Length: 351
Ligand SMILES: [Ca+2]
Ligand SMILES: [Ca+2]
Ligand SMILES: [Ca+2]
Image 1 (cartoon, protein in one colour):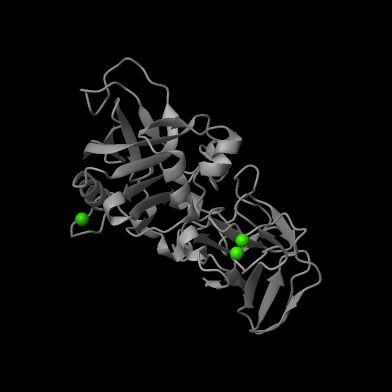
Image 2: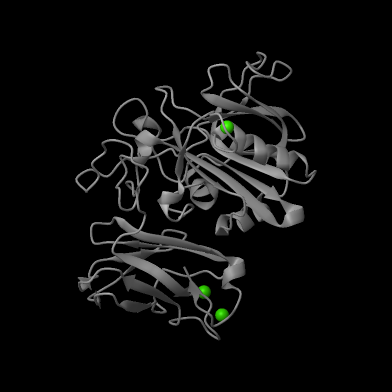
């Protein structure tokens, strides 16, 4: 099913407030031509808290591409599958969080400093307001506009964006209809003066804990939880590892001279047993695959995978992602690198 109207809104922060039910933090966004409300879930309706990833120095290959494609503020429909795949957020497939232990459970509000979502959001948004050139990139589902006054900002029309959170892995029930790929919600803020990005990514505990615990993988077509794997659901723990037994530790993205047949990915076996990689795959940023045939990685050893010139899998020098899928197609490790990291010819990027 997936979302129906996936959008990217870009603009500046005008003001914000906690909705009276305290389930959403409402942001009034100024795109230059108009104002919109961004409704950010800060607590689920059943009262549970959100898994949160905040990074004030977020370095991801998508960031450069967003600046190039969207130099102007405004409202952008990125709902079609090609646009989603190019620019949509996907915490899992774009390897945006790295180790999912970095997602912590935060309440909407709590006594004490810098320990809740209202404070995290307000701090970043106020920082953006202090910089005239800062731009907020909000991803989510655009709701159908009406001519009514907005519910929380009566000076503006009822128009805006919601579902500003992970939109995949929902268990069967009320929200699995929203599952999809490359359609996650989230907020990125660009600070041009500092040449820096900040990010806030949110996921409901119910989504988080029904994903495959080792890797947080979902079905590549539907974004549904993959059933029949080791995913058990159960009580929220917040203690989920992203990496499995074999991990990506390095890549030669930008070899010297003609690159054909010279790019390589370096894997490490973190266990004390040999592991066959027959049928495993590497997947690049545009979801092109490279099938690993007949390779074995030794206990506590590393293995170099040389990418042949004939492969569709490519390590682009302008930034990219690399995911390792096991024989069942479940991600065991995922990394991403920026153009900046790939600029030195002949140097291995280590993760
Ligand atoms: Ca607090
Ligand atoms: Ca390359
Ligand atoms: Ca090169």
